[in-house]
Image (cartoon, rainbow, N blue to C red):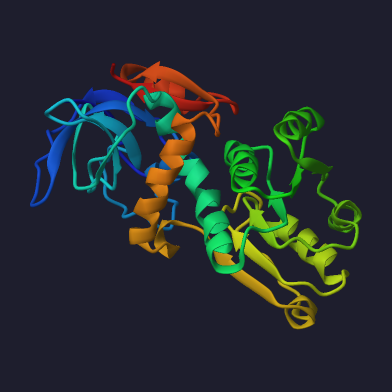
Length: 315
């Protein structure tokens, strides 16, 4: 079969070439690719730098896809055993979630992975403590950040404060329904700007796609505010893998710090929420910005500039 293949670790661009056919194991089936996205996690795993990378090469990258079963059913799927992945004409899968009639497979392929990163902690907070009144999204201008704004609105969050860089990108986010705070990389000034935007009211939930020094600016802003319960969820590390948490923040309020990633999820709950999230996409309550390429154009999709999520298709 044809697939996008990465020969070695180190960040090489995949090449469109022949790769051995997958073999279905117990409780698996062979499905045919319809659409699969080039997410940041896909690039990171292919480079060997992601925490879940196995170091096994050559490798077909890809973590999730929309595919067709042998009887023609359109499904959302993923969790393909390496060295196979979803950037291939066929894959062996265990999980296959039937999709609603008429749904856009490109939107599903582009939206589920980044969207679930915030949907899981948002719904967990709603189930455990009620719908949060105020949510802060750190790194709001990326694809996952924009989906997080829409996800929060879909759950009925009253106030969303988005933190990020780039005036034009922040205007776009404001159009989705978030208040915005522009940061510039000066921790003290960024902390002051964040504190001013919050106006003395700590957020109930923080979704952080950046971590690193940006998280430290948020911690500084929160530590200077009156006490109030805050759940802080680390989702991505675009600004750095390390961040120092001040002891005063931990002692001054009920403050819970956790992470959102496939290794932290209860998978039974995850599959239930994936179905709910796919329905949001089908209903048009979440809009996904994507750009489709054919599978043979993997090099072009892989190196596409920041913007719409690249999606590889075969249909």
